[in-house]
Length: 207
Image 1 (cartoon, one colour):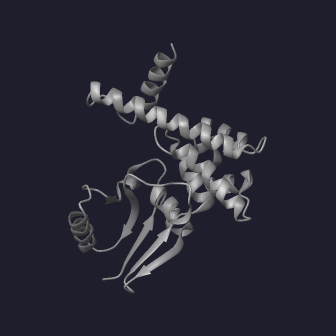
Image 2: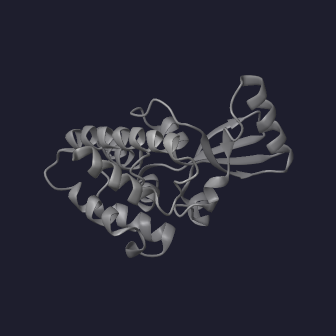
């Protein structure tokens, strides 16, 4: 039966760019019959992948927008049945700025996309990013304040490679701190308190 899958986040970056080596799972918008879920589970079982290796839980997060499909691009067609599309460029950046998770690859992904697009001769300006945010979410001010400030700083000084390394190291450190905390304090961390916990862990480590 015909189906359409729109790759989001890390999977979209892996499909379109070369700076990421892996992703923990594949977030996707899946437009298909219920049989597609069965097919996904069968593939996962055959390849020894964890449950939820491909999932649509992304639609419950703040960075989801129903307009994402409108701004996705055709990627590949499999068996003349399954069309795979991806989100690319400024729209991936808009999504990453909306989520801006310290313990994921969100910030380094933004910089990595800018670097690769520039190498391809496709400079993504701050105005282009603002327009993408407005197209997806309605207004520029809806993304977090720290993301707005960060996006402006990116275009001052031209040190993208340095910033990529810096923020990637920060993300790895945050992930390690959070993993250690979760091992000691189970079922404490949630989406509402994770940033506050991380800030306290970083402060404690520095002291």
